[in-house]
Length: 106
Image 1 (cartoon, rainbow, N blue to C red):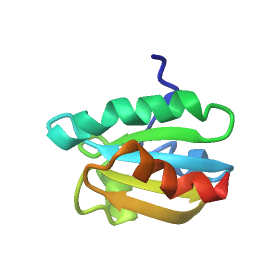
Image 2 (cartoon, rainbow, N blue to C red; image 1 turned 90 degrees about the vertical axis):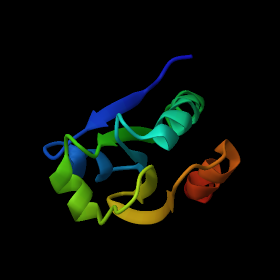
Image 3 (cartoon, helix red, strand yellow; image 1 turned 135 degrees about the vertical axis):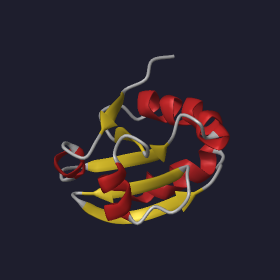
């Protein structure tokens, strides 16, 4: 399986989410639920290629972005449509629940 995720950080986050439909996965290397959800996010990045951009923020490497987003728990998934937050989810989620976060905006 290929992954089409882009590593986001304090420098490139705003520009990446400013255009189109974007799923952002906020995670950390030490987070077990983050590791469980990662293959699902990879699958979504491949299946929705061309319709949905997928970005990943490492909470430990980009604390300013995490603070700006108001993330208090990881994993957190946030969906942006043209720069505006339209939905989000915190914690482990099944693929169907993740797709529900962005499906209506496709």
